[in-house]
Each structure stands twice: as structure tokens, then as C-alpha cells.
Image (cartoon, rainbow, N blue to C red):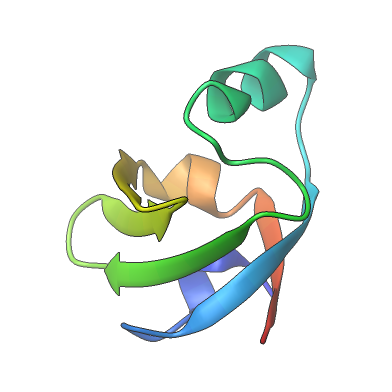
Length: 71
């Protein structure tokens, strides 16, 4: 499932990031890497997630490229 399919307060683990080197690097700078645990905070407007106790907002297009599995 993709990150955009989670419901608020659901915890998930990132399984894959479907994108090129540039996208992976951009997300890695924010702590969004394969194997990381994320919690969806809000999906109204930009996708707001918590990763490693940090709040990060990303666009829906990027969020659709992040494959996750519920924990």
C-alpha cells in the first residue's frame, strides 16, 4: 500500500521508495528511508507524517511513491 492510503495515527514501516536517486536523497535528508517507521498525522493538504520524532510534510505526489506496510 502507499503512504497516502494510511489513516491518521496509523503506524507503518517504509518498504520501498519508488523514485530516482534525487528523490531518495531528498527524502533521506528528512529521515524518510526504507525500514523507517512513520505515523500519519494528517492527510489534509500536504501529507504530514512523524518519522524519528520529527514532523515532516511532503506533497501527495511524493507520498504516492512511498510504499509502506502497516505495523
